[in-house]
Image 1 (cartoon, rainbow, N blue to C red):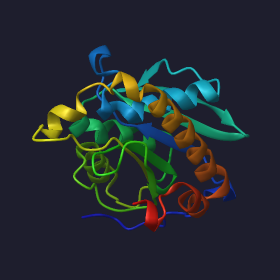
Image 2: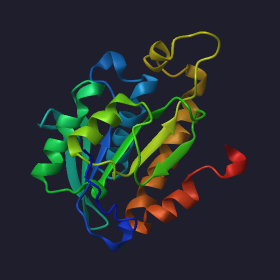
Image 3: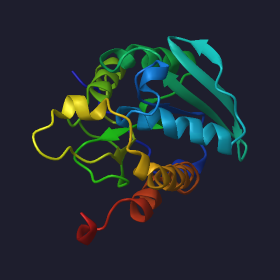
Image 4: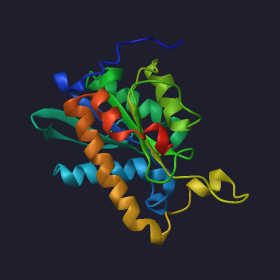
Length: 207
């Protein structure tokens, strides 16, 4: 049974710390997979904020530091997708981070490539990693950022598609998407989730 909690829509009130968990599969062979866009954004944020992701804790690679005087944890769980909840929940308990201060970043097949969508709560949408986190945290009041990777053309199995690398011709667009997504994360943390949704989510005409 899920426990309803206040999602704290205005993160700009500076009630940290915050834990940002990017989802992906561990291992070099998966590094550039579409399914690993969450890991890619965590790496991008670490570079932007001059943090080093090197410490292992609770089955995750983590970095921590202060960004604009706010304590931030960057997390890349090293379990596979259907088990990430135990890693994320363990870290959240250890650092006393409520669901409202956890931000989960993951890929979405149903959004066009490069589309960013932020929500303060909700179900998993069929994403195994998000489902695992909702179960382990005993709450669906968890802010999340979904980054569109698009769907395969023709009859290709979506499960195979997400485990393929991004196409070489998409590399520049993927990098631009990561930059924009990082800007949206900063807005979410320091201007509030409503502001982030207004500025980053696609408008009705863009869907």
